[in-house]
Amino acid sequence: MESVALLSRYAITIASKKLVLQCTLKEPIPVKSGAWDDNGAFMYTSSTDIKYWRPHGDSKIIQTMDIPIYITKVSGDTIFCLDQDGKNTAITINTSRVSKKRKAESDGDTTMRTIDDSAKNDSQPFPGEADNSRAKRRKIDDKFSETPTEISWDMENAPVPSGFPPEKVYPNILRSLREAKIMGPVKITGYVGYLNSHVPAGLDPRIEIKLAHLYNRPVNSKDDQAADKKLIEDIEIWLEKKEKARNIMFITGDNGFSSVVEDLKKSGHNILLAYVQGLEKNTSAEIRKLADFFWEW
Image 1 (cartoon, helix red, strand yellow):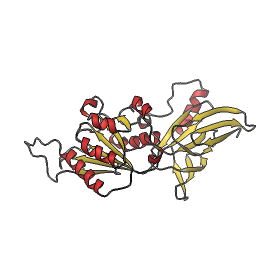
Image 2 (cartoon, rainbow, N blue to C red; image 1 turned 45 degrees about the horizontal axis):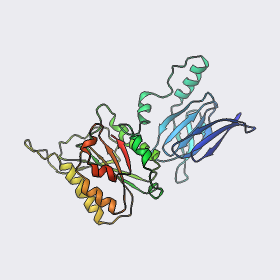
Image 3 (tube, rainbow, N blue to C red; image 1 turned 45 degrees about the vertical axis):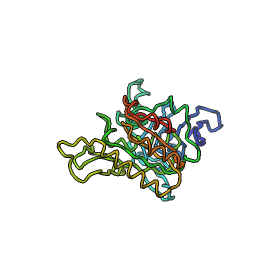
Image 4 (cartoon, rainbow, N blue to C red; image 1 turned 30 degrees about the vertical axis):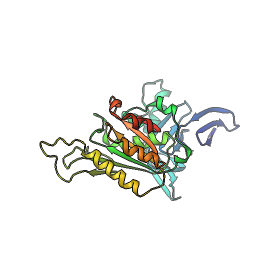
């Protein structure tokens, strides 16, 4: 191996054995570990991803993770690593995209993609795009960076966007939180109104689904806010327990949560908000004012 990799919290410095600088990779999420593979690519992990860097300059995501791992060795398609409990484990990855890219470049073919379209979708902040203008104005307080995040998802008014793979909702939410330096445990609860309310197949099982009513929606029912009411009821019960301050996030497409959001804020919690694209005006101005971070859904 002709190069070394020096890891810091948000950067990887690649240098020669004589420590002549070759490049620096900047990462928005803390770097956890890394090791060289058999072909000279540097495999490394952040809090949420397994990535690689090659001497030609590529740095791409191979796989998204829910919890960090710590690489000890890379051999072929196998990454040997330690989990958070210090136990040895091995992960099999698809390195063909790395090797194919390497071969394509050596043959002068620059059109080969190193990651497929599904992997590109994983790199999006949410099913929609992050509201960067808002993100630049506010920053997550350090005291909330490691606290739990409780997410209440109004699935009736903020469904999975059309055409977006349901199985990618959980990892995309997790990635967006990590990129915002929110690193604590995450719990997502989705709220629907009735037994026959639409819940897309393929959602990650870690998303808990709660019903407002244990029967089908009546034919002539005009109560489209059943999920909202159940969500608010659960938040009010939770507030009575006087839990320690944490991140509380709402995924919504309407304005039904103003009073409960204000109560959460007064209790010292950090408010996060994801709203449906194009429906910003439907989301209460009070909620937007109280939120410390925005995303589009």
